[in-house]
Length: 128
Image 1 (tube, rainbow, N blue to C red):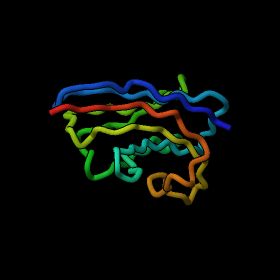
Image 2: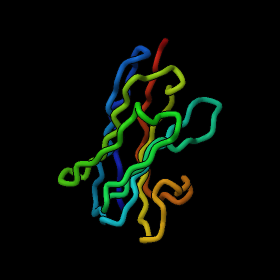
Image 3: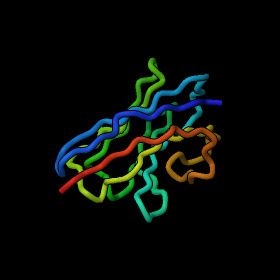
Image 4: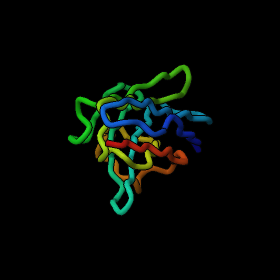
């Protein structure tokens, strides 16, 4: 099973930037989907961004489009979430997750319950 380690969170002022990392150990198949989720206090888990490893195709929640970018470094088995123009409402614990996909599956459409592998989470705090 793929094991994931999240890192890169911190505290920033509104308008600032952070880059989160998600590093995988173990064998990562090309047919995997990597998705970043976040959970704010008192709120449900929310999908933020996803990337299909094989094609590199990405998708984003409307709330982060144009501000966040998900990318991958296959040689390092590492995925990144570049977060720019951060807002106070982006404050949350961010977690990356991995799941294998069938060719017909949508990576973005996978809900949290479909992901067997999770990072430990990294806290992002944005102050206004």
